[in-house]
Image (cartoon, rainbow, N blue to C red):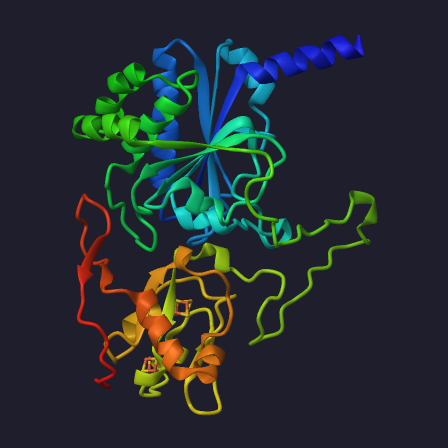
Length: 385
Ligand code: SF4
Ligand code: SF4
């Protein structure tokens, strides 16, 4: 009897399709919700059942913290789906894991006690990690943990859409992601059904973006063992019977840094500093809300990338043009001290910093309808002010 009920459970689970959307807390929540909600409406057009829900939404949800939204779709009655999947905090595994900010492929840490997790952790055998990115699947794979079974990485071309913003800056990423999903997993949602619901749920102007997502998605099969050895350990939580009486929460020393929760996975961009043009005005050190700057013996300010959340405040207040520039997080391989590199070899550091900064700067202050705007700038020639 036990064997039969286990088998029935497995059959029921196989009939249920799970999709998760990994998004940056607050900034991309509307985007994640719209993707999941529209997916469920489209599945219902195809006479499937479904629902969507959010997780990691502590109140208030924290800026940039990796969060998840889910959509569940099945060919069964609403009652059966509710009974099978309704009470789960999150699915055990997913058919498709969507990532709307590609810098999250470096790892996600929703809570300090969760540790830094691989972005493909929940992707099941034969499933897909679908990333909005300007990079190829193989470039992204350089940051993704290896799995012991085959799956796919798919890319729908685009920039991380709203990170770092307080407004919903619509660049139609929702429709493009849904189009890509219809191509990857037509059993979850079909393109025709999406064509019917997108005009009403997302806007008639998004039909071209939906078709574009369907056509432009790049899909790459990943073999078992492809990817990296995951460098972070997952904290072991005490079992319920190992808790001591009462509640003990270890405090962080005032003015200190929390060793257990470094927050760098909340970052989409990081500040790169040209120490040679710094005028030692203190403003970055004073303005950083996360106290990431450490004064150095020669009056400069080193940045601790383990704790930087990438808010961009330091770049905004720095009075010397191009001395602090925010740069795409995927361009970096570690959180090492830039000041130490500068002291080791000043010329090599300046060349490195210039190369990372490039000649484009993101311009945030406008709601464009087309996403981030990048503008060319004059390169830093070493002039102070
Ligand atoms: S971007 Fe600058 S101001 Fe913001 S957390 Fe990082 S170092 Fe601090
Ligand atoms: S704000 Fe700019 S110029 Fe002032 S100390 Fe920081 S890096 Fe130097």
